[in-house]
Structure formats: structure tokens, C-alpha cells
Length: 327
Image (cartoon, rainbow, N blue to C red; front, side):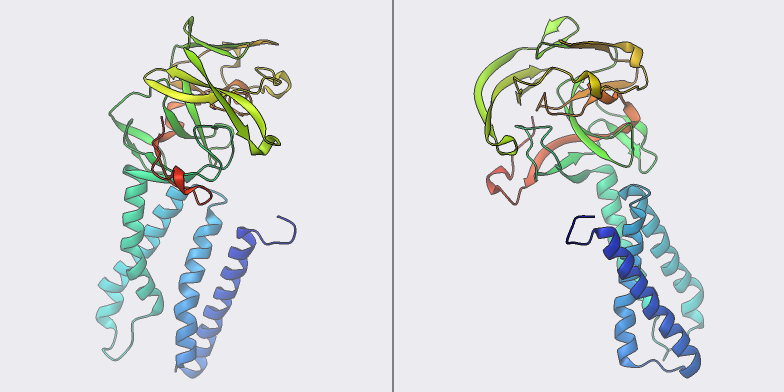
């Protein structure tokens, strides 16, 4: 928890606890008096939605957003269906609709629409780190195309329809292999069967050096405004910007972990060579020497890929970045 502030989990727990207390108090009061005052009605109209939203938010600690949306849709849909089929026909005409039913009826269609859009069309993400500089900056809000590579079943992320293959040079969002609840974004530098070498800051794929051309310098505010050399790199069909930190080694051997297919990689002080196994991909950041990527934690399975990043739709610190396409 940041010093001097509350994190979202604490806020959600407090909100859920207070809302539950209000609902419990109303339940006890209703059993004794039977008549609900306007004040209690107003409190309930706030308490039920707050309890629902806070509970769904807390579940994000244990699963991803798609699973929470699906659960929320199921809960609100069942409440709405139960009331329509069983409770409403038996309810007297002068008895008001329960607050929880009104909430479910209002939330259900919205949740379903959001779930379908995020699962099959586009999903928004926020860039949390500088590993993809200068292509993507901290604070960029991006859109990810969910159907470029095929149709996947939500939550279990199983592909049922193939559309396009994942290509070298694509910028993709994927579930981090060491913790699938965390999303990462990197560039694909190796597809199944590729032999990827990064030696003395030069990238080679299948024995062919990746073409690069110096373009200037990037002033990195996170490194005390150090000016870092930038290059245009042609990887597959993509011409994109990348940069290096000359003082940093190509790979920090102390940070290399044990991972699946670790024996497919060879490391030394000048870099590494990895052969990508079937059904997996090798990812690297455009900020080549300041990126935690496949050289350290291994390959990314196909079923971990969420989609291809294609657009920056917002950056509150730099409005000029709005609308930038992602190469």
C-alpha cells in the first residue's frame, strides 16, 4: 500500500462491508416493522450497486476481468430471470419491485455488451512501464484487436477459429507466463521454429541480421534525461522504432530464470541464442536493454496471446499521442 493513501482493495473492502451492513440492517428492520421509510429505500438503492461492484472488484485479485464480467452477467441475469418467471407473477401490484431486481435489470444488458465487445472485438489496456519505449509510453491507453489472430472462447482463451497467424514484428498483449493474471505487452521477434540471436545489441533471426538504421536520440526522463540512441528496425512487415542503453549488457545473466524449454537457449556475456519451440513465441521490448521479456522468463504459449495492439486512443499527459497507430 502506498504510504499516505489507500489502495483500491482496501476501498473496495470498506465499501462492500458498509453496503452489506446497510442491507443487513434493512433486512432486520423490515422483519420488525414491515414498512420501509424513504430514507431506507434511498440507502438500499445505493448499497446494492456498491456491494455488487465492490465484490466484483475484489474478485479481480483472484481472476481476470473477463471472468469477473462473465460472473457478473450470470448473477444479474439469473436475478432478473428469477424475478420475471417466478417472483413478479406472485407479487401484488402495489408492492414495489425489489431494489436488487431493479439493479440486475439495469446492469445485465450493459455487462453483456461490454463482455462481448472486450472478448471478441477490442479490449483497452494501459501501458504501465517503459519497456516498449519509444513505440509506447507510460500512460498510453491502447486498443487491442481481439479477432486478428482468430476467435477465442472468453475466460479459457481457447482458439476455436483461426484467422491470421501471429507474425514477426507484431505488438501483442499476452498473459504473463509466470502469472497469467498479469497482462504484458511486447513485440514478437520469434515465431515457432525461429532461431533468435541477440548478440552485441544486434538482433538476428534465422541467421539473417534484422535491418536497422540509426535515427537519432530519445531523451528518457526516467533515466535523468539521458539521451539514448534510437533506430528504425524492420522486423517482418513492420518498420518500427527501438532504442538501446549502450552501458547495459545485452542480457543480465543474473536475471535469467529457469523456464519451460530453457534448454532451447544458450547464454553468454555477449547475448543469447534461443530456438522457439512449436506453438510458442519469443517476445522482446522495443526498449531493448530495459525490458523484462522472453530472454529472462521464457517463451509465450499461443493460448496466452490476447490480441494485437493497434492504436493509442488516449494519453492524458500528451494529447498529441491520441490516434497514433502502433507499428
